[in-house]
Image 1: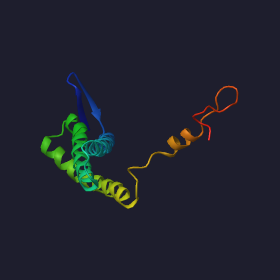
Image 2: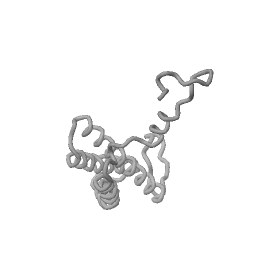
Image 3: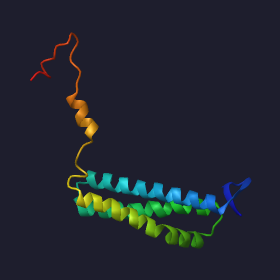
Image 4: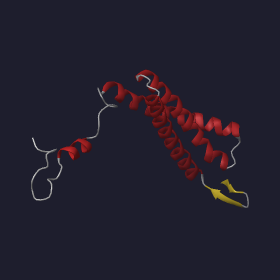
Length: 140
């Protein structure tokens, strides 16, 4: 049984399965944060596809590992052991997620530049003006 040091006055027992769930959940969240942040920053800086994918992958690994370490360290795992656990447990997971995500971006033309269907449908289905007549801006 491991103990979580969330509060210095309270040592709450944490089972291995619960700790593994927390670490996995944190890894997935961190990976998502890194991926989105990388693409946002690369878009803001006007970078191309290759550079934006590289930045997103680096940040996904960084945030994925960082957020995985959080529950492990809070449970009292030594830093060296926690880093080893995070590397062993999450490297394949993060690499697979990044490979699939970025393959879709590269293979699917316009995947990052297209709008959503709902935004286009909403703009075409404007309701008529009061009285049943179309306003001059929507008349053809």
